[in-house]
Structures are given as structure tokens and as C-alpha cells.
Image 1 (cartoon, one colour):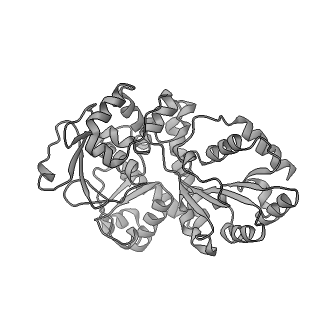
Image 2 (image 1 turned 30 degrees about the vertical axis):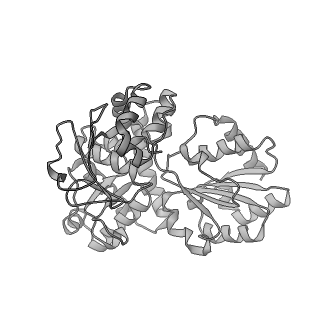
Image 3 (image 1 turned 90 degrees about the vertical axis):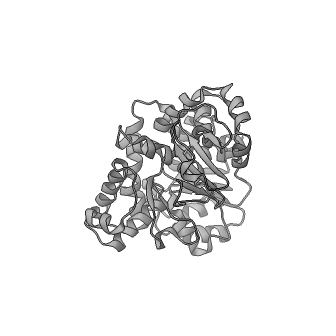
Length: 396
């Protein structure tokens, strides 16, 4: 454990206290078992290390470990927890938990056997597959860390603190909000930059290698994260990557399951399984017609990559209409129920209809609906139910 502790302290020393992701202040760190899940690259590791830096003056009773460390090829998480508690440890932070076979069962036992121990774990978005197992659901408080919002991107790169606004406020009071925000930043310029370089905190390391890192996120999810939760072949992983390429180069990407299965050279059932794994792991988002029921049990109407940065990393000439829709879905889907309305582009909470477009977009398609809005690109100010698209990046 001494070697693990040295690695922990070295890593902790390299992490800045600021800026912080929005979730930092949403977490109740007093809970005994906290699970933070999210797509690779969103800043989960930095978030928990920043908490340690902020909350603990004395680090003697804390320990951070990553379960992809070679140490765990010959040692167990349970054994580490026992040694840690025996030596007075009280706060254990466990990263990359999805890389450890049987983590949910061991975690339940650790939680039950060491009642003085506080545990924070992080892992892939696909942890949802396992949280219900081993009765973790009633023990753990679960948080999801999505990709960055436009508001966070402005904080991270411009060091400007723009307020977060709730959706109702944006819809009813957007003209006032636009004046407030445009007094601080050049909104359209920041928005265009965000579409290419804003989804991940590693933008702080510069733009030059940013797209390479985004592609590394996609490859790591498919080659490492998904195989950690499902035994899939190398051929299946290649087909998932091919599907991602198809999504990024076909506009709009509406779903014909039979045709897509044929193009990928796989069965309908296997294709649906691919969609399920990729959605749960956070690299794609599936849009279905409004109503209840699990996505994969119903035909999705459209498939989107998770964020517009992925689109541009794969296809420099990404279709601007798809980019706009991807941005809107990405910024709203973490906190709202977003569906396909049939008429218009998105239904939000089965209450609002949104059509996404450029300055020339009209209400023609959605004119017969109450609570219908246009979300417009390339506009710093809106009017009535025509709202600048960038405003939906200030929700968190």
C-alpha cells in the first residue's frame, strides 16, 4: 500500500484546485458511499482529487487508488480496504472501478463490514449496468458527470463566471439573459469554439492535440470500457467503430435497423446490442418517439454522437444541421427527458417542442403547437419564441 500512497500523493500534488466542474458543488460528500459515473475524459478523477485538496488538511486517513493499477493484478480491493482501515484509514477514493471484475459485490461487502469507512468510486457511464446488482442501489448515492456545458467551457477557458439558468427561465426571460451574458462575453464566438473544442476539460491542455484526444476517448470506450462490462469480440468492436463513422458522415442519421444491420454485416439483435452498449457507455445518444419504455426495446428514430466535438474529430466537414442538433441534445439530455416529436426536432419533458436551425428558420413546421420554440444558430439575441441556440449551453 505504500507504493499506492506515493502514487496518490504525487498525483494529488499535480492537480489544480480550480476550475471545478459544476458537479463538485452538487455532491453531498458526507454520504458513506458515493458513485460518480460518466464518460471517459469528463474529469471524474480531477473532481475527486480536487475534493480531497479542498476538504482535508491532514491526508493521513485518506487514500486514492485507480483499479487499473498493476497492483490489483495480484491484490484485491477487499484486501486493500482491510489494510487501509486497520491502519486508521477513513476515506477511500477508488477510480476506474469498471476495470475491476466483481467490483459491485466487493464494494457491497466493504460497505457492510467497515461502517466507519467513507467510499467514493468513479467509473464508466456503463456502471448503470451493475449498480442495481449486489443491492448497491439502496446503499449508494449515484451522480452522473456529463460532458462540459458551454457555461463551464467559458469558465475553464475564458475565466469568466457566467450564471447557470434553469430551462423555464431561459424560455420565458431569454432576452434579459442574453443582455446579461453578452455584456460579459462574445456569445456566438464562444459557442462556435465550444462546438469544436468544448466538451472535455482537457481543452486546458490546448487545441493542437484536442481532436486526437477525443478520438482516444472513443477508442478507449470501445476497446476497454465496453469489453470490461460485456464479452465482445474484436470484430464487434470494429463494427461499433464503423457505425460511429457512419453516424458522423451521414445526415441526418435516421434509423433503419434492417439496413444498418446489413451494412454492418450483423444480425438485428446484435445491432441492437451494439446500440445499447454504446449508449450506456456514453458515446452515442438515441432519440425515440415520446413515451415510456426502455430505448433498446423500441426502435430509435435517430442516432447521434454524444457531442459535437466527436463529430468534428471524425469529420472536419460535419453537417452543420447535425452539429446543432447534437449540441442541443447533449446539453439537455442529462437533466431532461428528450424525445423525438415527429414534427419538429425535439420534445423536452413532453411539454416543449423545439425546432433547431439557422437564422432563416421559420415556425412553419411547428406553428400549430403550443409551447413551441426555435433554437437559432448564429444569433446573439433572440425575440419572443425564437431563442439563440447557445443559451441552452448555460443550463449547468
